Image 1 (cartoon, helix red, strand yellow):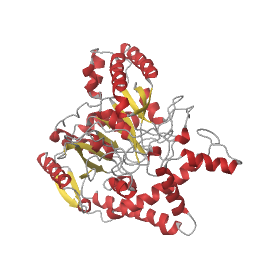
Image 2 (cartoon, rainbow, N blue to C red):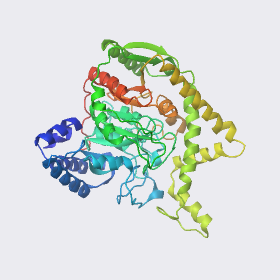
Image 3 (cartoon, helix red, strand yellow):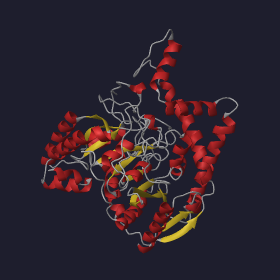
Image 4 (cartoon, rainbow, N blue to C red):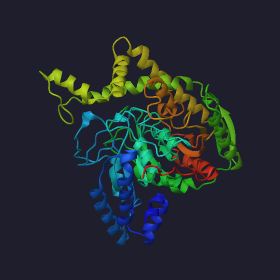
Amino acid sequence: MSDLIDLTITEAREGLENGDFSAQEYTQVHLNEIEAANKALNAFILPTPEKAKEMAKASDERIGKGEAGLLEGIPLGIKDLFCTKDVRTTACSHILDGFEPPYESTVTSNLWNAGGVMLGKLNLDEFAMGSSNETSFYEPCINPWRRTNDDTNLVPGGSSGGSACAVCAHLCAGATATDTGGSIRQPAAFTGTVGLKPTYGRVSRWGTVAFASSLDQAGPITRSVADSALMLQVMAGHDAKDTTCVDVPVPDYSAAMLEKVKGLKIGIPKEYRVEGMGAEIDALWEQGIEWFKDAGATIKEVSLPHTKYALPAYYIVAPAEASSNLARYDGVKYGLRVEGDDILSMYENTRAAGFGAEVKRRILMGTYVLSAGYYDAYYLKAQKVRTRIKQDFDAAFNDVDVLLTPTTPSPAFGVGEKSADPLEMYLNDIFTVTANMAGLPGISVPAGCSASGLPLGLQLIGKAFDEGTLLKAARVIEEAAGALPQPTKWWV
């Protein structure tokens, strides 16, 4: 039965439908794997085995009646940013200690309605603020991959590090994640998984703990492009509870993914050839271009002239929105409370004890750029830059269908190697933040390995609400690159 954990969602659906194994058996092998691996990897901060068994049993009953949903019996991990009814949800922050929501997020509701099985809550950077999963109150998550002949623990990327780690290590068949500046795509690249960030507004944000409301978007991390298509099919759709969720039809992504790419126009943004980019990253990018040529696509260089301003503008807009969103955590209604002499000192004590260093840094940055005298100089200017970035993409997409870029400037780095330098850490988002600033869909697909034996990803950025074309193009990379070697299971 242990080989069941190696099945993709697509393969498992077929096996469950054919009666080759039950949802309860499929769930149990994942629970066994979590128990064996989680102490070393720290991907799940809260496994929910009893709930998983109960949901799997219900799935078997529905399968027996011929009432199976699109994800019936599929064991999933849930990033601890999604509220799950009566199951602790903390955003991996001390300030939300013990919080059990009395409601379910729209994303997880959609997954459970489709027959998904919840294995537990996954690790992340506190309030999704980070690129390495090192800011979590529950300690860092560890990448299943290691450099060749090197036992150094590596980061899985962030903020969705637990999601990427769990999918990579086969602790779950798929996982939910969120992406504010690259937090789905960067960890996917670091772990050799597929990470899909949908168009802003394609997936409801209701019931998802907010970081930066105009940038946050939920999406899946999976082990194949086909699995991403399936999960997005279930996660997407209009939600009246979220005013930013757009009421547009959800296509059949699985069917769209199978279309041919001959004649597709692939754009190569010249501004993404940044100074200091590693030779192996550049070589992988060139390889990706050749793969698309071989598939019959047309390659065209395009210009996104405001790319160089994207990262600084992002680190004004995102902290500004975070400082506003996190003002609600005051120790009064839920979560941590640290008493004081009066209500003001209680607020101060609670926030001082409850927030970690990176969250405090971003609150301070955000409060500063929104303050009187600095709003126009920083926040307003950053929003104008954001408009320019969107216009750059609009112009490029007049000539091409999809953009091809690297996902990250390097492979995964060691735990502690960059955490002391916030600026160096922020540079991990250099290739991903533009899609968030413009609200566009992006996907990272495993495309090869570094000289040190670590996975590397290529990124595709598509037109708004055109995830179907993005998935179709992603499949070209997946098929051309072939299956990556799997990490050695040092954790069991």
